[in-house]
Length: 386
Image (cartoon, rainbow, N blue to C red; front, side, top):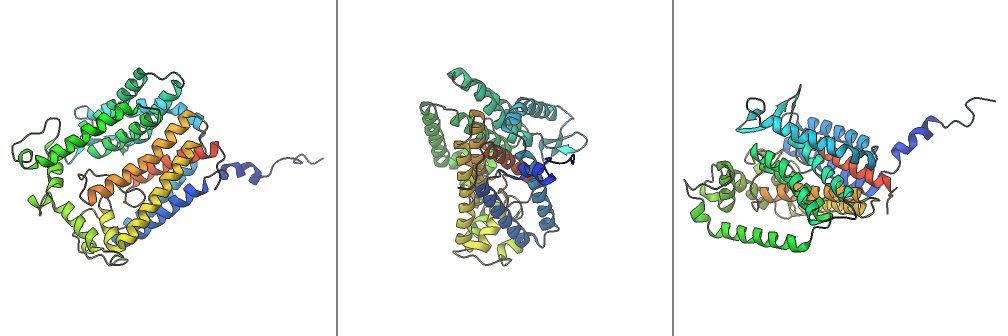
């Protein structure tokens, strides 16, 4: 008898690796990536090799997505504590005198044979850690457990803000807060915080004339952070300086009208009026060329991605998987909302990229890893297109 009789073929052995990917989620990601490359070619064709480099970044992100999707949620849970501890230790080391690398007044980078930004690790490690914590406390949650979760969140956020890096600290904070919210945080604790924040913002707007005067110090904030908030409140006070970014972004968005100026025809973009047009302010360039219609299509694609991620979270088999998938899904909302908000002048400029659209290797790899974990959770339930 042939010794190979009954043995599975090579395709039969590797077939499970390619099965189980959530098709609606994958289609939403592919559409956004295609829109991102389309935009990058238009706004970056005269900006070096940005289009080619971004294509490479996306290819790498899909490799990361594919590999991460093969890791079962149980294995992801085992990585939560080591990854969190490693990320926090790297943040502490970065903060040590003469150790971290300082650029433009911010100490955010560390040389470990190659230059890395430890705070990027926490974008993934933070929701993993908190999801692990609440999984351990399932069925016996008390107020103290939420307090411990708050402490676990406050440590890395505080270290990142000290660098200073307001944008990344906001993303890490929101990722952790989403986990805490989905874990069952009482609305009686949420509503007062929301009302207090609303009152603070109202007070800030009404007292802008007084608190934004030269020489007035803001407790707990750096001068550049104060300048960003004051510039947001009234960018016309320094139209050629600190307010230039916001004003040019709003001009570009408004000049796009309903249907936009057309592919590669953005005047604000190609006459170099829009700063960072391939990174933080790419939404302004996109809006100028594609108009309101293009913006609505882009927002609809993000909503499709987010809602599909939340559906995966709702059908996940364990509390850990549900919390992790929910946090990862809403993190895409935070990225998109903060970027669009800061470009259109309703939020301070904090250096948050627009997912799949903005240029950036590290950001694309982080997105690929987050999507890979979502795919892993979807595969754990065998979710198929519905």
